[in-house]
Figure 1 (spheres, one colour):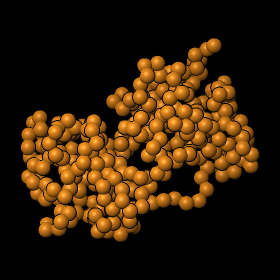
Figure 2 (cartoon, one colour):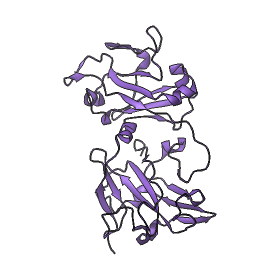
Figure 3 (tube, helix red, strand yellow):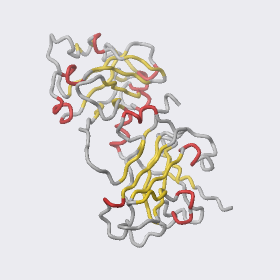
Figure 4 (cartoon, helix red, strand yellow):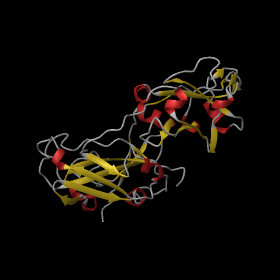
Length: 296
């Protein structure tokens, strides 16, 4: 049997990388309810970040958006040399730190302002001017964009969803189902068809931007074109009425390619026909779906 997997390097956008240095849970949030702001100090590389990722000292949030509290306010940042104790971060281990808040109450803004202005913050020691390897004891500026919930039918989506509370508990050992609604398709060559395949790739590293592609060994130059028909195990199930689905467990699907047993951090997927008639004749690639590898 021919080898049907191939390891390939792929670049990740700066925005996606930033999103994983700092994020909020649940996603999407209720601005009037409790959320957790997370920062992975291991992924912060500038200034004193490497020291902050391993320090036993307390670290603090310094935030200025959606609103920075004035001097004298109980949630003011404090001074650069002495952060406010009310903004001390909790440590979850392995360089992960977090802070719980109700966004509208913490920043004293409306829900619309939470959605309209990203949370901007950095992490620092109590005295940000301390020596952290010749640098100030702070991370780079971090930004978390909060998107308002979207309603209405979706052409391509997953369950558990990319932006639902369920995602928080999903690991690469759990089942994910990809759904595609062909009735919402706008590409003429895809409308009314039923030969759809779900091409999946999985990230196994952040430093080198490694992805594992599930592809045919004789067609390594095009990881998501003209190959799906050769992979019957990736054909989507036809539920009727234009609805299609594909269920898989990432660790199981990628096991043959992931020979070193690297931890799968995220996946992307794309819906294609069994044979591509013309360039870009496929459904747009999904956003990157990050797993809860902390609890894996």
